[in-house]
Length: 440
Image 1 (cartoon, one colour):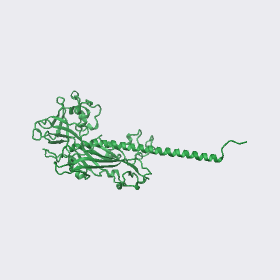
Image 2 (cartoon, helix red, strand yellow):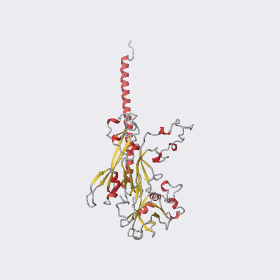
Image 3 (spheres, helix red, strand yellow):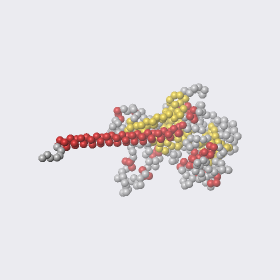
Image 4 (cartoon, one colour):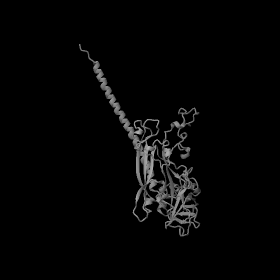
């Protein structure tokens, strides 16, 4: 009688085939999983880069909008040259750009591990129009030259202060950007009947710390960094400026009718350590404000094993931030710091300048990276080139850093760990049309 069943050899063959199939499926699944996460990381990095470039494009393309590329080269009647503070102390003539090469390299690469890879950490300051794309008109300047009355009858005024904007005083505590000497909300207290559609966007555009630019019909430029809102008269927006304007002179004839006026903001792009209280403020990355329980080792309710706060931080997460500066002293406006990109591995700024020696000559465009040249002649800038590198948060052991240190596609975060972080670059050229149109 023949017994049914499998022989030992058949079982062994079946087990080998089964294990081979299982291993193949596991290997394929693991490979697909790695590919999925890699594509996800790539998409996240590229998305962060594009969002950062959009911010840079908006601010840079509006550089000197309604203003001046270089106050030192513009016609002016006032003897005092308008200036902006520069990094390291001292003033520079008020211009569209201030550029400082590798100023933040110590933050990005403190140990110099990536110098051979050519990393850059530049700092860029731009005098631009953040909130308005319109020039407002002056209805009149007071005989003393201290009060400017805005013309409420033109469309630019309506777009700025009325259409689609929330009207009336702010409820609760006014935002930080409305604090200081302007104090727009407090200045309107008790004048609810006179709001006449004044919106919060208009108030923000004229925030304290702006540069008020006035241009006469003859092309004379005036800049005021000290101004505030005056009391209302017949529902008109009136601003007080100091020092007084030279009204009823050849510089500003009559009562200043036909002059244009625009608020400009001084914006800085910088690489910062988010946990460095000296550069970003003590509460910028305060974990006590994130978790329900204070990170106090003596707290018996501590949920994190009494770990030190630093143990919860991602190692060397260098951020590109955008913040508004006070043009009087270069200090950061409260509440204005915005994170543009995280895990930055490279921030390189370069310029295309027009080197022609006379205005009637054809353009002579050449690249420029010398900060003295840019800061001394910002009116020559025709385009700004940005190279932004965003790295993966973690190092990949499969990417040895020493294999190709000059490629710019790898970043050494921690030499004590195997591998390096993967870097994605995005490069863009941003034309500065408002400067080019001035035919300087």
